[in-house]
Image (cartoon, rainbow, N blue to C red; front, side, top):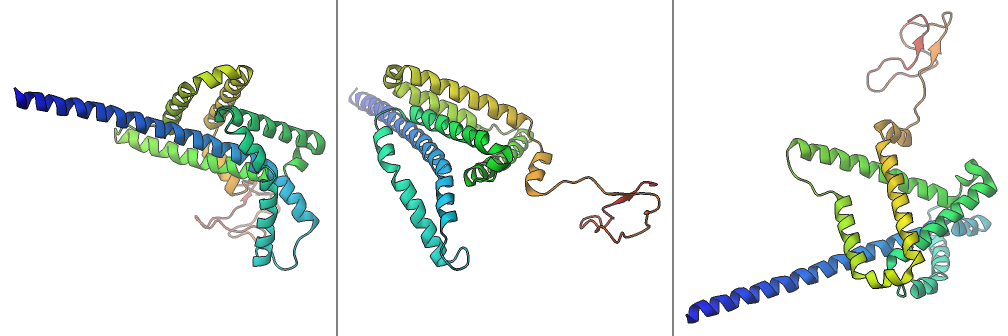
Length: 260
């Protein structure tokens, strides 16, 4: 009887210890999710601040070649001054409200800024701003990662290996964070509703973009895709063309004849 009671006590203690450990691990995961969203907030601020840095760098540049030690030190000093001016705002806003609301606010400010650039300078001129080029590079990187993750999922399906996608993990942590900060989100009222609308809009837009994404779209980021040149009948040539190069893969001519 004593041995059975001792074993039951150990088993009960193990159950309580496991429950406490799982509760601690879940809290750590939720905190890591909040830290990830805070990183997204800082990323939005950095992307918006790129134009300020670009403006300062265009007004005065140190003498010497680009990417030299002096040039890097000057660029680092400009970035430090621009971001240091925004640190007091972040230290005041982030601790006072859930990080999801801060994400929605910075996303709206960033969207308003890009729309204002399009209205003032036009689509083509605004695309030349440093913030627009950086955002486009970030989107291209996301497309590459999506294509790679899709290929990995297809390989796992062929091997009949179950895979937990990143989206499902993200949604689970999102629900967990919203549950842990439910009281604060309920007190925010309107901003919570705006955050939900922003999140749904971004997810729907991302889903449509990913469905329309193909390898041709990825190739257009890396290379310039042009139609094959066509020679008229009088300009038709046999063998290698003197105007156009040959393909580096198949060694055929990159142009064709209209009589072919």
